[in-house]
Length: 289
Ligand code: NDP
Image (cartoon, rainbow, N blue to C red; front, side, top):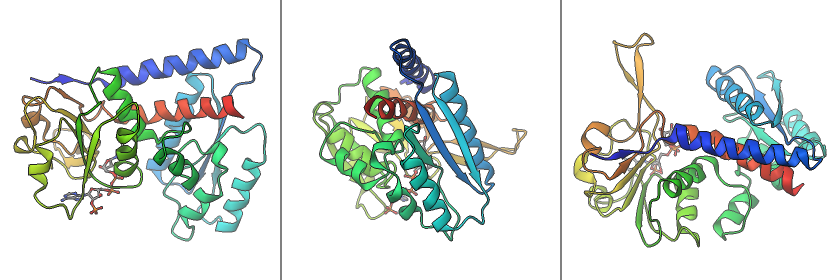
């Protein structure tokens, strides 16, 4: 039976490290790092993510404000908000919660954020730095996965890492991180057009599922002893739960756990890491400003 990678415990250690570093900065006479979070509209999921980020920031001594705007804000007005935050020296990190309303082009807004304050690591300059292996902001979910692997003692050097999913927020940036010097994996990225995906998945020493389909990865797709990282968050109906559903990943956990050497649960695996990396990035933004 696989060991479970405890994302909650590992993320708590990272938060503690950030808290210590913030305290050290303060003892050396620096002000607290400051994160500006921009929230447009009243989508409950976005509001809940933003509350989680604000709470986690406060717990480690990072100051933050959530700037909330009505869904009717124009693209131009929102770009003005970003420009103002860019030129405000007291702002270290800027995070615009996505998705934005349909009348606003997400890409235009992300591109307007100063790369020096791009704590989400979505700006093309940040992505370029990542691809060529320069230090800088890290993409939250992919960097969280690398932290999980390294802090669980997984040998990544020379390992074959198969990633299922090629999105700009998970699959592609993760492929770059795993490929970079110091991590040194051999990487294969699969997607919906990949031929004989199960055969490729079976070659993985480290198998990452970032698809968005419940129980997509079945036992026959996993090499015995592989490390399995489940990024997926999917709702499945569950009449036994008060809310009528439960969250599951992309991996058939019950069937795969007995084969894998290490596996992340959902929830409590990759999920908690995302905010931990955001805090690391905000600390970095303050340290380099
Ligand atoms: P996207 O929908 O952007 O990408 C999904 C990827 O899966 C695409 O590359 C797609 O291929 C591929 N895919 C879909 N169906 C198949 C299939 N049948 N066979 C092979 N590949 C397939 O999703 P995200 O990357 O944004 O998210 C993936 C999952 O991770 C979601 O469940 C999301 O909720 C979760 N997530 C969790 C986070 C966390 O913090 N734990 C953070 C971010 C995401 P193609 O490109 O060809 O369409």
